[in-house]
Length: 100
Picture 1 (cartoon, rainbow, N blue to C red):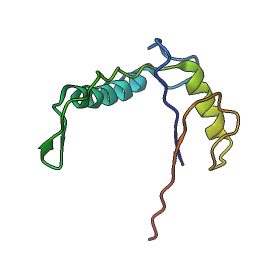
Picture 2: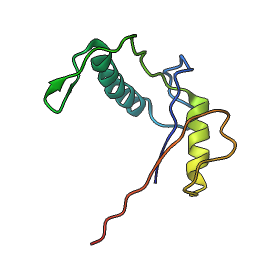
Picture 3: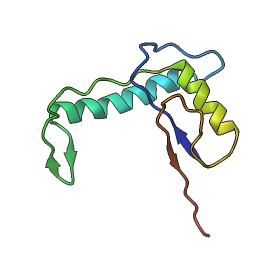
């Protein structure tokens, strides 16, 4: 089960106490923000074609320790369903199985 909660609210880039290591957070944000910047600037290529620039600049994602804590709490329940007490946070749920 993959659970992701993302927010543009926080300005904190610090490692969260007991959370994901700072190097992993930095790697995630750097990769995501590089893609966002390429879309924003009009340098993103999809299916061999350069996509037009965004009409308004796309801001970089930032990390939020409270959202990380909330996401981990939901993941710890091992229930594959949207949570009911999400404080207006978005959730993306994904599951994949392979038959061998």
